[in-house]
Amino acid sequence: MTEFRPPRRLRLSRAIAAAQGPVLLAQGRRLRRETPRLPDAPLPWEGRVDGGGSGSEGGASRPLNLLVIGDSTAAGVGVDHTDLGLGGRLAEALAARTGRTVHWRAAGRNGATSRDLVRHYLTAALEGPTDLVFLTVGANDALALRSARAFRRDVRRIIERTFAAHPETALLMSSLPAFFRFQMLPDPLKRSLYRHSQSLEREARTLIGAHPRAHMSPPPPPYTEGFFASDDFHPSAIGYKDWADFAVDDAWSVGFDRLLDGH
Image 1: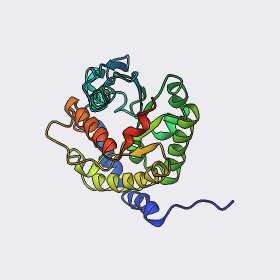
Image 2 (image 1 turned 90 degrees about the horizontal axis):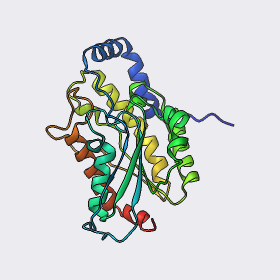
Image 3 (image 1 turned 120 degrees about the horizontal axis):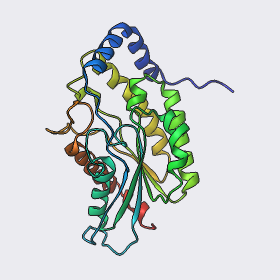
Image 4 (image 1 turned 180 degrees about the horizontal axis):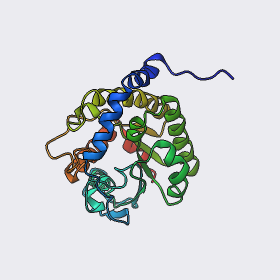
């Protein structure tokens, strides 16, 4: 079988980073040394948001089961209570949209790459009832300069295993962070990370776009004041709410809600 070779524009992002290697390594070490390391949100990473029947879909349907799986953002880094993290904020946005009660749970690890999710977290996470999966991954793949080929392989495995376990579920994937807007990142590290993250994101979009029960969020709008936590890298409670509202609003704008009608 002929070896897959990614398009030149995808290989270029790693080549540029390699050429700037000494500078990027020095900047990366300094950031790790000077940036506060925030803890995960306290366990358990699960909760419930009552719908109240006030959303656009009414409140007659059974509760919606949401699984958030990913990296530090799934772990709620940046907030001191899980309800204020990504899982809780997504549940709030979904309950407001549908009027349905949302049971949510999160799985993953701070620093996890797509490969880590496949190897260590995905199988166990999919054992519970799952109507909607929200996948947040790729930032650490970009930080580690993993290849677009490896990222594509792992995202494909996440998609395949998710729908093998739950054929009628729906999957939302977040876009990768807009690293060029991270004020705490110096150049050329900022530009290099953003360039490489975009090469990874293009691979994920191809896979997600080809699946009839999956959708990937567009690039985020400019981050609002208060979006970042005290480390200027992870979202705050405000940031997680903005992110969740943006993702759900976009999904509904393209008719994604129809995938949840049977649940």
